Image (tube, rainbow, N blue to C red; front, top):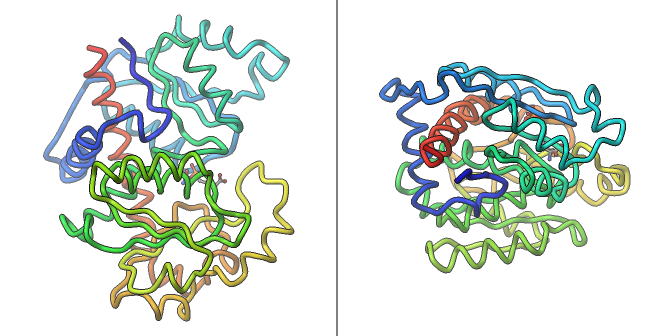
Length: 306
Ligand code: CP
Ligand code: NVA
């Protein structure tokens, strides 16, 4: 049976922590795998990418496989070929598909018709691979305390915020999200996070006051105010000004706070440039960890299909 990774809730908390542990071992050179030997994995991208594309391609190579990069604008889907026909065709050549697209429903339809595992590499709704790397990075800094510390996300209630909520529920973390009124994360993602948190001991909260979120937080996370495909950027930016992560906001956080950003960053908007540079180490660790976490994810998915 093929297994997809479209949302963090497609895996159990146990599987989630197994991915984090394996990723940490891959990074330390304590784990090696050739599980993708003789496998060809397609990367089907409709949006730009620096980290996701390269971390997947290199991660696939490290696991002994080959990556085939596909831009949707160069494919027949751009001329109206059905999603389901694209899925059925690509399933005849490839062993898995890693997909970055706009509408989440498009990804779900593709996965439904693909007979190979499909991995979500970002949609307008979610970015689950990012959160695997973020939890791994948090674990590197806080170890078992990752489940005790307060994590704040400040900014736009976008795909990353949605997945961070679900991730907090899945991994049993304590997360407070602060966004302007009207820009809160998706209600379904919040419900899913609450449901998961009941079983894992995590807690999730959505507020509108950035100070309330950041107060005594050990990790302060932000992302761009205008995401790929966003059409209301100009209006949104006006409301988001008080949510900038800067030294003043961070003065409310725990001493030695870690700042996370999934990148790319728009310095001067969601994060001040001096703050970004002060926390570059943790931010680029997050970027590096994309590769280790995705290697662990792919290893687990391919083990499960046997
Ligand atoms: N964080 C992230 O997904 O970066 P890219 O858009 O560069 O892939
Ligand atoms: N929210 C951002 C994340 C980029 C990795 C976007 O969707 O553009």
